[in-house]
Length: 144
Image 1 (cartoon, helix red, strand yellow):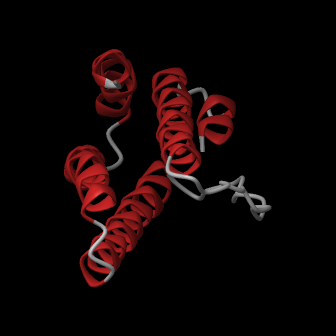
Image 2 (tube, one colour):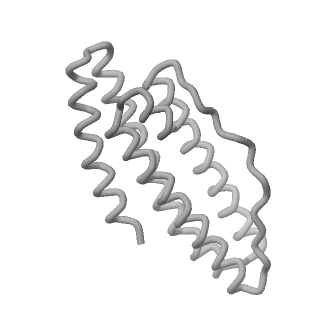
């Protein structure tokens, strides 16, 4: 997504997406460390290549929002498993991800709403691209 935005001349969106990618890596490492510290052996399986082109910025952020909803659902399923297994330590650990996903969903929805409001207005898109860089700074600073 960041690469596509960058090629489209949307430098602010690209910076935002690169920062989001970095943040997701931190989240992954937090999970890996937890699994390993609890006696497991975390393994990362191969991922399929991500989509590299989008018809519009709206399409890209629609996909981002849908992905955040999917991640939230997956985390909620893990919470259910921790209850079933009476693994209260992991339940407590996962609560950080539950709270994080609330923020991620809200942010993606807010961005999507703004893009829909802008519509085809080039001036609005220019301002949005400039302003989203501020979200990048806040997001990066908020990461533990």
